[in-house]
Length: 577
Image (cartoon, rainbow, N blue to C red; front, side, top):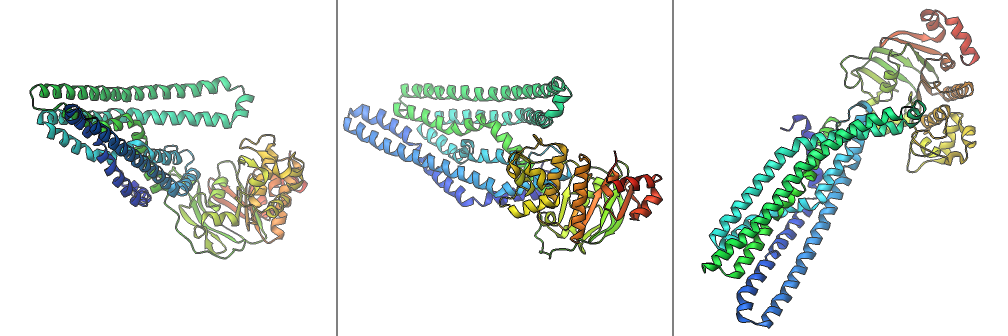
């Protein structure tokens, strides 16, 4: 039974499908004529056996053959045309949902990175494949099955009874096929997806796997999952093959039985030889859509599961509502009683946190691991929504800004920086299809990464990958900082910016912070290393997800940190070892 939570998503899918309703009618009309022209073969055989052979008229045979050639040619053109139309309907359906599904997948992954039950784009592709496949065309042909069966019955009631009985058996086989293969196919798809995810993870961490001598262990882990996937695929394939072979064998037997019964009726002088052959041809045509559905049932099941997954995804991640465009904000951030519950958890990792950051200020957020620093960073950038309280940017709650707009105003350097496949310039420009070269260089200069980039073989056009390639961790982090500063944001959120940097890199980050403050902008630094808070006037200390202290740096250090004098000395030197 469909869950109520998927109703909204299912409505979106139906709306996208409804956009092509005129084309479905067009295909239905063409299908009418295609199936009507399917009667050409039986009528031709009827005329040849009953008229041509009896009259021995060559002229009649030539005329009938010419007419049949023309009619079959028209049928081929119509069938080809409806196939092309359905291919474009499928492409239109996918194009209408590509952006929506992609956006939902990204937003869902941001808040639920461990939620792997919905593949999103692959589900959309499975639905598109079904819409463009011949099996969907059989939906337009199935209504003609009763017409063909009636035609057989007109030839002789016994033939009609045999045809209806055979059709009923095939329908029962189809229902049993759906019932028996559904669960194994679903399990096989899930296990296959899991094995692919393991392979992707090992490939993305290939450097670590190689360095730690984990190749054999990782292969064993992947191979175990892959073997289970293969077992599931074989089981599903065997079941489907069983029903496909059963259907094909029974249909061939049924056509032979139709000929045998027809021959018997001819011997009784109750049927003509032409009607015997025509009835056999009609029988094959009547059962063809059912046989097609059974043979392509795996495709149908994948599409049905994909449709359900998409309905669930689009319901859980509704489309963002349009927002009134606000003027460019000042770098003033008000956090009011902020409470954040990580997605999928019951306990808040940040509770009732409040502070204010004014233009030209930098605040360092310190505290032990697990105190909520990264949670605060995700909440300030809009990745995680507050369970309580508000985050206001220049007086407006951040949820009043669209995701793309908020990203222009709040630059973010995550704890783990990942580059995308492409050039350094494309990465700094956030993969913009029309990047601004001046802004790219300006952002790199603000991040003190310009000279570093120029020393690379191709400078800004040096190609990198998600694994970083030839770049060191510090270089990747500085490029990530330039990406955060691209587009001139008013607030910069840095999560552990010094984690991979040497003294030169740390000083580059501090220079970027000074530049931001001089321009009247604000900076938040989530830090473990004292060097990271050198340029901070304010400190926010978190303990257990709650605010333990907030105020001028010296006051907080003196109040909360026993060795504050040592830390003050180390920050004055620009770093610690």
